Length: 480
Image 1: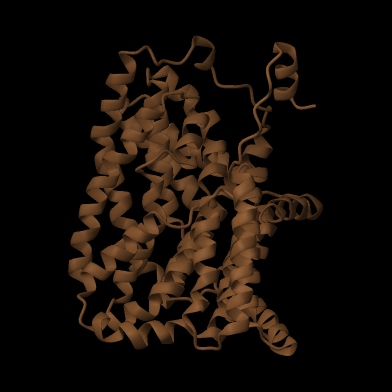
Image 2 (image 1 turned 180 degrees about the vertical axis):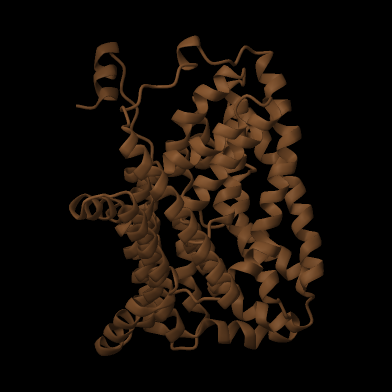
């Protein structure tokens, strides 16, 4: 008997029937869409605009909160039903999808997670934060604020993940911030701004690789017109935003307790272990710098991280003196966490393969091509960025690929340049991190900083969101 039924029996009232929620409506919507896909497959032939149905289904179902892997599987099923290919052709599409660039991005995400675990186990991630804060602590609150931001930026850039990096940094940063008199909300805002700037800069983050691949450009261009301006804007605005949050939250007594000022006890580190950690940290930093410089100079393709990431992990664990068994366990543990993402991206590649059989974009361009060719590139770019902003939540790399697949052919028709695509895709995939609504990244930063006042984080996001929109609009007028 459910709790509502028990409550009703106890009070002598008739219990209300359970309401239909998202968990009930999402499978029902998926069932209806799959049925519509089958009807479309039986009644139409390629080329057909019905090939866009799986993309629309993907966007709608993801907004219901359904697991993204499940959403991708349902969309793939829809594409198969609309295409209804012969069995041999279907097997060929599924097989070819294993080597598609989209699937490779999923594999890069797995490798990146493995490197992140290696950095955690070897103590390199911890050492990066401590090294930066050693120079910032004791030099005033402004220097300390930028030290905390830089620590989060460097760690997120190195690991390619926001939540994992802040989880490592927070136990070190919170006691320092508390001793300096920072409020919980100001600490959360500092970590949020620095971490999100680092996520934009991360050279081997899956979403950033997807942007460079979709825009057909290299890391240097990506940083110059996309991630670099956002990171610089974050650093500049922090000088205004964080003190504002500090003043407002301090008036409400949003300070840390005395027991939170003392750093949590950590395992005793011997001089030999400390030496190995320093050696591993330098080895990782220099190898990362070398790989990024090489990728920028040679405009390395999507497959380059498949070499660079294992090299980074190998160099780091070797310099730290980890045994082969422990090193292998670390990278397997990290990689295993992201195996569902690899499955997601393989299904996404297959989804696009079946949609290509249906040629829906040929129909769109045939009917709307003349009007699109007369359209200015700037309005088109702003519209796509705005659509992406409120589009598919969850996996930003998948969102980037979807935007490129849907709007890429039309963008080529109206003359959108590779540099402009970098701006469009970066802002379409990352703008919702800053607003207009609360999101997982805000809540995650609050949790790591032990803060509880969401309006301050939402205000921090909006304070960056509006100037960034203006900045990228100006940059689009320059690169188009």
